Length: 158
Image (cartoon, rainbow, N blue to C red; front, side, top):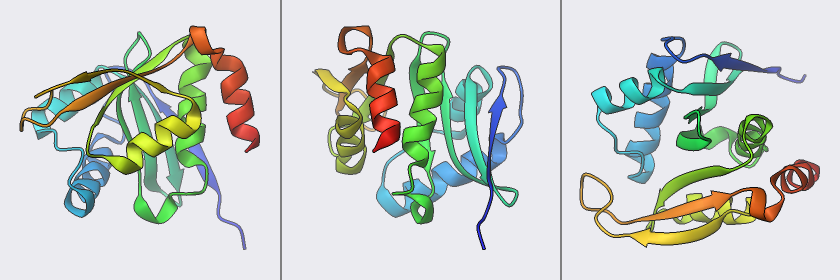
């Protein structure tokens, strides 16, 4: 029996799935020690973003919150759904709207760094003390200088 996964788009200004996204983010934070944003920061940024969501049987299993300039504020996929292409599909949806995609990732977040590297993101610079807790970050970019449309098409075939 196959399970349907639906895609949804939450437009800026909407609260749709904000509580579910917060819960998913917090679950990942507890399990992996990443995505450490405060509630007010998270919900404000979420509401200002276009959010691509994947929902399975009414449950949010992944989302990407993106600013108008293609900067990914949050990308989260539930642990039990990883390895199924959901993260790739979320980035592909972002690429549909933007010539360049950028984000930050903790220098200690090996899972995220491997994921982004696999998709063709390049580390552009390291930023010390970037996060509120003093954690360091890498600024990553996938964009026009690397042929984003071709990259995403290739990525979706993998």
